[in-house]
Length: 187
Image (cartoon, rainbow, N blue to C red; front, side, top):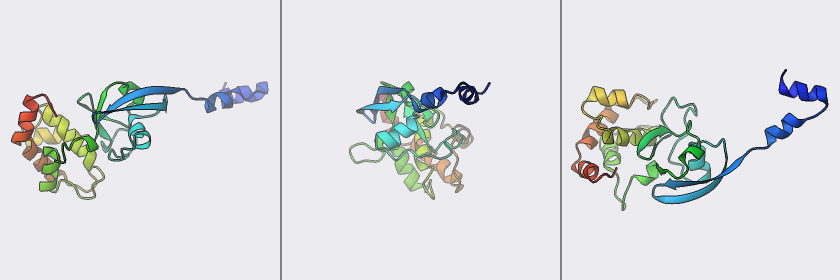
């Protein structure tokens, strides 16, 4: 029997009371090198924690179903779609967002390459594209344009800037500054 119908037949509104109650958790997110202690509903996505609770709007909410890649961030160095990742699973882990790539006022080599090659048009998908590109280069998947296209396939660009994005990733992968950072174990 449907819970709400059963409760109505029993003359209680327990399901409504239960639906209004939610479990809140205290979590620690290490975002871009800074610790953020947040109290969140247990169902909060990492995307919503970043945007609505940590005040970092660079990670975009696109489809909110894990299909577009606009919300891609790095979690302990691995790319994840943050709309499908519960914030609670990131407790104590390192989260890198688009806001955390530039260092000492200098853009990350992937950001520089995106500017150089016009790897964006409207810009909505750009942060997710860049975060995915940073990860695929670190993973060693930037050997050729077809390989880059395959590993970037989870990131959708509605404007169709794909050739420029592939060119940007190719350029960034060959950037000596990025290669020396990889040797040091940095991103």
